[in-house]
Length: 312
Ligand SMILES: Nc1ncnc2c1ncn2[C@@H]1O[C@H](COP(=O)(O)OP(=O)(O)OP(=O)(O)O)[C@@H](O)[C@H]1O
Image (cartoon, rainbow, N blue to C red; front, side, top):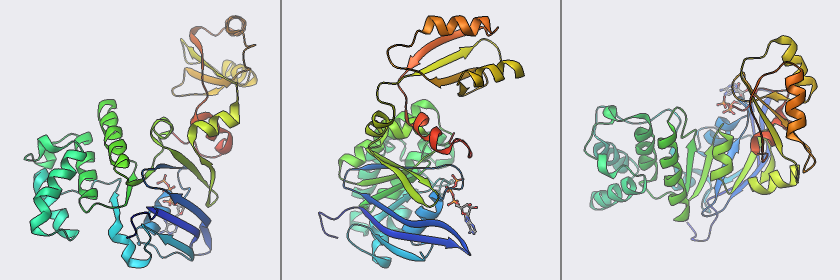
């Protein structure tokens, strides 16, 4: 591996399933220390892309280069933490890491040091002696990452690393990912969690019709799309009936999380929340809260995939 080589460089990648094209001349570069958020609705091709990078699918065209190497050689520079936990549940954390370390070719001489380093970097050091099946989901996910980085990969691939974990565990995972990226590792993070992508990723790309559209720094993409505009967030006291849903949609609102949360892109400084609150009340809608919020990735991608399956 060249020291200055990019962790990931993909050019013209095309993958078909039979006659169906899932990835279409896709381009993607991930630099050292970069955390790239791979986004896309269900079925967009995220797993297909990860499987192709990891050599499990042969592309129909294009090249995948990891840390300056192609073909089977590239695989030793990749660390994969799959969505389905790949751990031996009846073994301790240390035993798991030792098994994975040996499988990835680390010598007996180096193994103890690597296990210490990976468990420290993944914040699982204090649980090295515990059986994996005794750990909560968040801890297991971090052990999964520790197992993926033992061989010091240039590229770490995380597939939905925070699926099903609580806020505290999610925050610790974020700390781990940032820490690893600061050591120079490139990170490819496949996620449905757009808030996570916005806070954690230095760049993101939305996989749509086989290509990565809207690639760039999340903050810059949002600013370019919305400029000064804000979002109006409305929280209702009750779940609205059909007539009220029609009213809200006519007024430009779309559903947010849950049945009582609604959101709409508002004008800039001219927007008067009091007037809007009055109209909602006149329409018979009881307000719990109305406020302005900066638009986020959610708003941006909603525009693009509005008619398709939602991202969250
Ligand atoms: N082995 C396969 N043979 C044929 N079609 C497949 C195969 N695997 C996936 N597909 C199809 O290819 C498309 C992309 O699937 P993929 O699993 O890569 O999407 P994804 O973005 O990972 O979705 P999700 O977010 O649900 O995991 C889907 O339409 C899927 O049905």
